[in-house]
Amino acid sequence: MNTRITDVLHQIRLFFVPYLMVLICCLVIKLTYTREEIYFSVNKLHDLWADVFFTYLTDLGAWMMVTTLSVIFLMFSYRKTLLLVSSFAFTGILVQIAKNIFHAPRPKVYFASQLNKIYFVQGIHINTTNSFPSGHTVTAFTAAVILSYLAINKRLGFIYLLIAMSVAYSRMYLSQHFFEDVTAGSIIGTIGTIIWITWLDGRPFMKSEKWNRGLLRRK
Image (cartoon, rainbow, N blue to C red; front, side, top):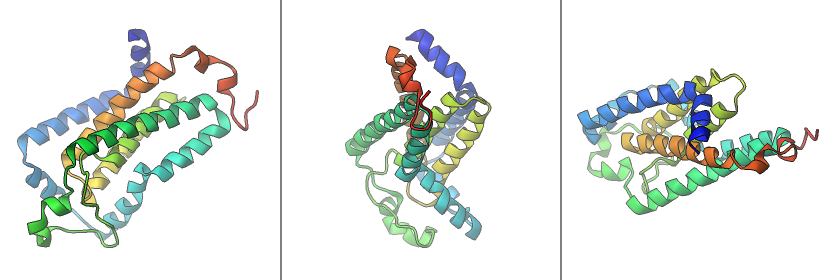
């Protein structure tokens, strides 16, 4: 198990090492500033181009992205598809358990008496329940870890990290989540996926010729 997880971490090192540095910074920010200070610092930074950009970018953490990636992977490798789909299922279960334990209110409810101070992006439906942790962030970081692990060019790991971080930021920008929601979501998505693929991809059947085929790649 120790050898397997070392191998996984080595393969995603260009994602994981920068992620740890960012995570440390996030924890320092959280210990230094209050929830309100962080939220309103993000909320005041808005522009029309950013409204459009983050409205579409946030969908990279939605199930449509999961479905699209799964179909693409299925064309070329059953192994990669299983790793992807099962990782989303595993971290998805973890985040739903956490949401139902904490039942945390979303920013719109938490700041109900200060709504006049908040900038809401027009046309966005604002959720009100189960804020902690952020499901979109979990999905984005799960995808980033899997794609980094499977990438031939390991340098892409850093690009995947930037995309996942952007999705996390979009959840705050759109007033769907708090800073701690997306920070926790990134941890669940990253650590949960690493643990899962370390176990699953170490199973003997995953190395068989059959599992390395796909619908378009039968040999």
